[in-house]
Image 1 (cartoon, rainbow, N blue to C red):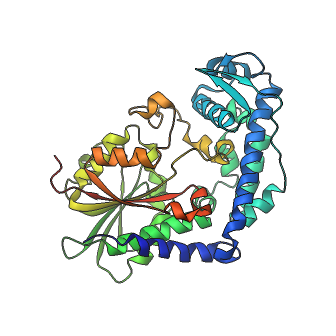
Image 2 (cartoon, one colour):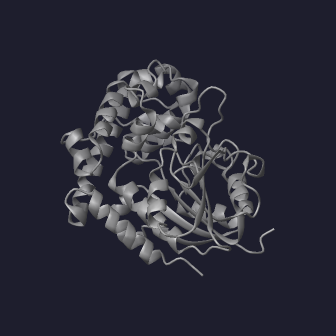
Image 3 (spheres, rainbow, N blue to C red):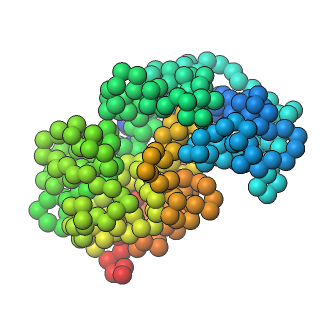
Length: 377
């Protein structure tokens, strides 16, 4: 039995229509709002570099640029991603591992940040957060201001994260995910489901809604005990699970799940190849992996939420144990995921939204449907 990706897409569109102001008819208007927010973010990046004279008409490497601004070591990867984005947009030039300014290039910043977020159906608090971060970019890069002090000013971490992650684009992928899982066959009396990195539970809620009335053995996991303690849904088991460690030793035995779901978490793996092999091992032969991911840096989030990807004390950088370490990229593109999935013994069924979706793909969130090969070693 396979999953009907078209039905999953239609479920996603229905959720998008409910979450987007003006419904699906308003989707084309999202394009200019996204572009204005991108320009605002890129403009803030190049303005900071020019103001500190970290980039000029001489060729300078990333280490020199970071030193001029006094970027904290854990955030230097993010500065490198800024430089890649600025070069791609034409604001700076690249020669090998060095960069120089194109001073005539100026980003046009139009409109109102809060209004653009509202047009996209994003919560007002996310617009306030982004503006606060733009106002403090220097201090954030130098670790003089903590991201958590801006993210959680009232100390309500779970409620805040859920609000920040609630938007029409995540509504689409979560609803599509739920429909995909609803179609997954169970190799027993109940559908045995493992969720990785459940966080504040937005994917969890969509999946449970789609599976209403169906016998399910649901194991919700996250690396943080905070989310485990807060997740009090009836009929859902909970466990702490680190996707970088052996699954068997963490209560996810080999061959014990029909489905693994992961909402925007696999990019956090230190070695994504090892994590995918662990997922394959946890699945029954022919089991399904359904996961959402970004497939590139989001230019808007480069000056906001991507600060959260910087490693804290005692933590390792995402991708530091796989091929991403050589490129500095955190997010694999579609081809990259297809290659990694195949190497781990998965057959890719579909990626949603497909290429015909236009503006919806510009939102940056994708759903991947992959099946575990039955005879992979």
